[in-house]
Image 1 (cartoon, rainbow, N blue to C red):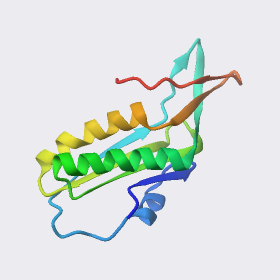
Image 2: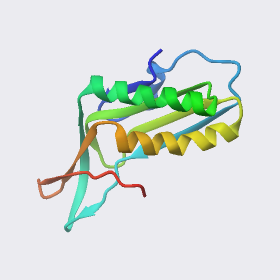
Image 3: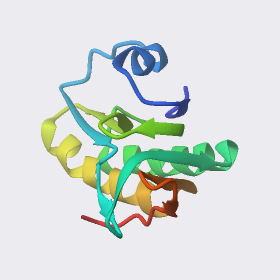
Image 4: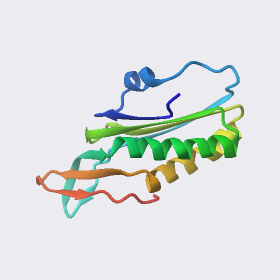
Length: 143
C-alpha cells in the first residue's frame, strides 16, 4: 500500500480521505502534522502562493523509504505523507503527515522526525510567488 501521495493543488480533507486505507483495530493513537502556506514578507513583498515541483517518482520513492524506516524504528502501525504539487494559495494546506501507532508515545516521537527528514531529504521544491509578480525559491529551514 502506498505511503506517500503527491496531489495537484491544495490538500483538502476529501482529497486526503480518498487516498486513505482501511482501518486497523490495533491503532491506539494517531498524530498529525499539517503545513499551510504562510503570507511571509520577503524583501517587502508578500508571498501570495507557493508553487511546488518535483520529479514525482523520485520524491515518492524517497518518502516511502523514510516512512518504512520510521515504521520499523518506532514500531508504528502505519504512516502516510501527503504533499501538494502545483500552485497553492496562502492560507491553504500543502503538507500533511499522519502517524498511526498502538500508543501515543511512539506516534508523538516519530511525527516530528518524519516531518523534518521529509523536508530535508525529499526532492520537492517550492517557489514562493510574490505580490510584485516575482518569485524566490523556498529554502526549507527547521523553524
